[in-house]
Image 1 (cartoon, rainbow, N blue to C red):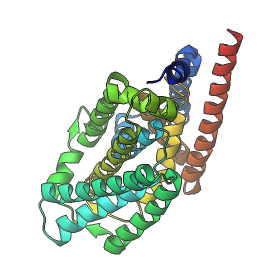
Image 2 (cartoon, rainbow, N blue to C red):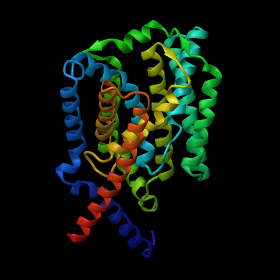
Image 3 (cartoon, one colour):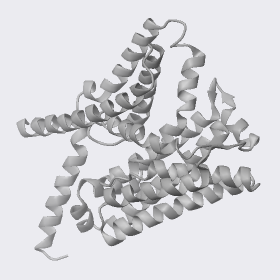
Image 4 (cartoon, rainbow, N blue to C red):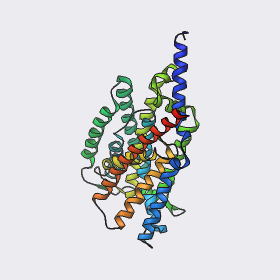
Length: 340
C-alpha cells in the first residue's frame, strides 16, 4: 500500500468504525421502547378482552402460527446489513412453498426430497440475484423487484389453485407442541439465535456491518466486499425457501397467492426492529420483537371488531413510523456526537 493511500484508508476505517459504534450511545429508553410498547399494548388489549386475548391458547397461537413470518423477516436482514435490499424474498418463499407441495402431493416425492428440491431452487435464485446485482453492478431494488414478479408468476403456474394434502408426517412434526408452542416456533427461534451469533459474534458479521457502513473503506481495508454481498443474497434466498416449506407444512397445503402478501409485514418488522436494542441498525432481537408487536397488535384490533383492511393499514403505518423513527434516531445520535 502506498504512503499516500495509507492515511486515506485509516481515515475511512476510523470513520466507519465510529458509525458502527454510534448505536451504543443511545439511551435505555430508545433501546427498549419497542419492548415497552409491546407490553403496554398487550396489557391494553388484555384489559379490553379479558379471558380472550391474553390466554395460553391465544398467545400460543399467535407465537406459533407467525413463526413463518419471523423466518421471512430474518431472511431480509443479511442484504440490509450489507447495504442492499431483497424484494424477492416473499415470492421466493411462494415458489418454494408451491414447489415443495407440488412434488410431495402431486408427484409422490418424499418430504426430505421435496424440501431439498425447493431449497435447491431457492439457492439458484440467490445465486442469480448475487450474480446480477454484485457481478454486474445493477441496483438491488430493480433486480429483486423484477425477480419478485417473475417468481410469483412461476409459483402461480404450479399452484394457481391451492394444493392440498401435504404429507402428514411434516404437518405433525411442525405442529407438535413443546412447552405449549409448536415446533415451528422453536425452529424459527433457533434460526434467530444462530443468525444473532453469526451477525454479532463472528468475523463475517463484522464484515457484513463494515460493508453496509462504507463499501469503499471496506475494500480498502481488505474485505472481500463482493463475496460478503453475494453470501448475504444467497443466505437470504435460502431462508426464504425454508420459510416456504414450513408454510406448506404448517397449513398442510400451498397457495401461491398467500406468500407474496407477506412482503410488507416482513419489511415492516425488520425496519421497526431497527429502532430497538441497537437503534439505527438492523438486528435479530429487534426483528423478533417487532414481528410479534405487529402480530399481537393486529390480533387485538381484530378482537375489537376491526378486520380485513386493518392488517394492511397496521403494517403499512408501522413501516412508515419505523422509517421515521430510525431517521430521527440517527439524527439524534449525530447531534449528541457533535455536542460531545
